[in-house]
Image 1 (cartoon, rainbow, N blue to C red):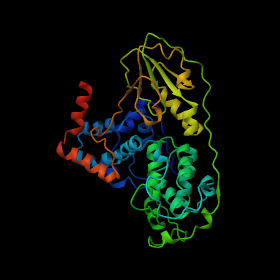
Image 2 (image 1 turned 90 degrees about the vertical axis):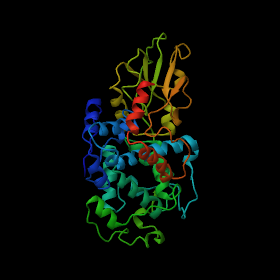
Image 3 (image 1 turned 135 degrees about the horizontal axis):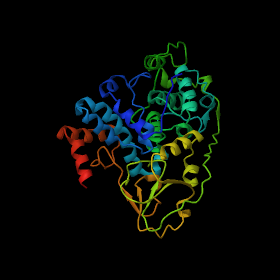
Image 4 (image 1 turned 135 degrees about the vertical axis):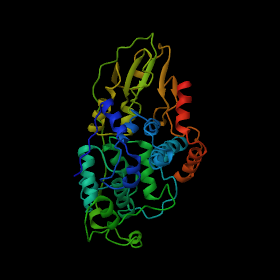
Length: 382
């Protein structure tokens, strides 16, 4: 089983950015042993941002053209965030018409037991449980056999996967499952055994996926995917003391999607990582994920971790200012919600597909080859 490691030290995270080879990434990213960046947990958790990654590459002399594939892949995440902004809670229902029959709305037992019968997928699920990570191609394979071969509705399986992912991103995970299932794309995504073997280095034969692509949509549900079960997920949050706060200073609210150690680092402020039980009841995560979040938070000097609701922060009405970062999951925070750092802040309109979104982004790149550098200068000046 491939080993994935995700250090929480900010220095080590920056070193990981420094090691990216965008040219190798472009040609090998789909392979299990390809030049993947392994930055998704840090981008998802807001420790770093996509703009920071691209600027690092450009500062080393790479051209926009040589970075275009990695920029495009980073833009997928941004696109799904924009979809959530526009559709809000509607992303948790089928965005488009379903293209095939659904037999149940539960979780296939074989996902829980890593026993789908597809070697690469079962190894990927085992790694997900043990290490909190799954290669993007394995995620697609898992979602495809679950929804399009096993005929399970995407929603519960997507929650199961999100629960275990260190890089769990509600928008990306939800919309990606819908994209595979055909409820947020023009067609369903199918994979066969030949494709899986090619990208994962396995040599499996005679599985239920060892067929042509024309045969897959009409398949009956294989025995390995026939049993289903309900899903019970629970988040174990740490017991924490009530934070000791100075009401004469501003309050900065951090959460599991904003762990940026550079955010307002120059000002004296109260800094609180808020772990709201209500949020984690709605979007449960594993103990491993909680530990990862708290580990990343230690990069922020003076930060206090508080398990409780926003209303339980003492003296909430007394601070001269309250700051957080805009996010669809945290609209209820009081005070000023600052804009997140986007790759393409100008592209805010709703787009029915990623490729219509990407055309607008690509136009900006083609129009100005120094697009990212100029935007960063504007940010710093502003």
